[in-house]
Amino acid sequence: MNKTLTCVTSALLCAMLPLCMFAAGDGFKVKYDGGSISNVKTGTDIRLVMAGNKIQFMDSKSGVLLDILASDVTEISYGQDVHRRVGAAIGLATISFGVGALMALTKSKKHFVGLTWATKDNKGGLAVQCDKNDYRGILAGLEGVTGKKAVDSETMTVKN
Image 1 (cartoon, rainbow, N blue to C red):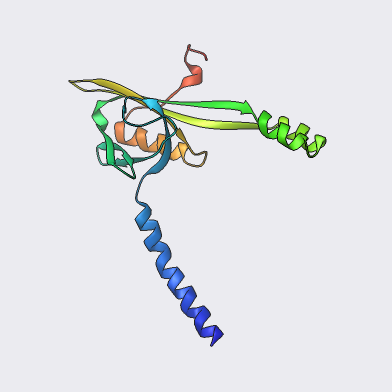
Image 2 (cartoon, rainbow, N blue to C red):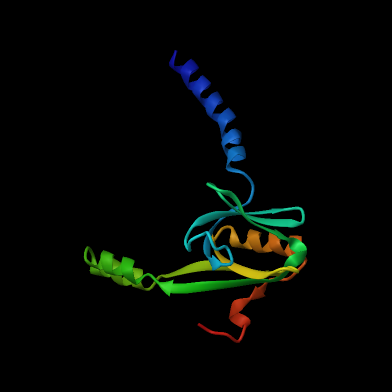
């Protein structure tokens, strides 16, 4: 009886896994960091979808927030924010000074992708924070859809 129940449960889970992945939808989960989407707050999780000749930014609540034609994109940029994990190191130092000191030596990277566009009516731009496992795919997708090469923001003359 237990083997039968285990087999049925396993088969059910295997059948549901592709459905769950399909329900998640296409695109990449990114965090909005600022720009031309006025009704979205900084830090909001949104979805970036590249399909055909369109780039869409979507929200789970209100649907499509922004629809850009790939031909309207003027620039794709990429940058990193590297900082030390001081807060975590202080927290660990209260427990173990050695572990806290080692934690202070580690660095954390945040990956940002910027997009600017211009149409007949308006110009705009935005920046999104990407997961460390997704930013290369996002850049490759944007480059492929638009035909433009991404610019590394660290090579630009403007510094923070």
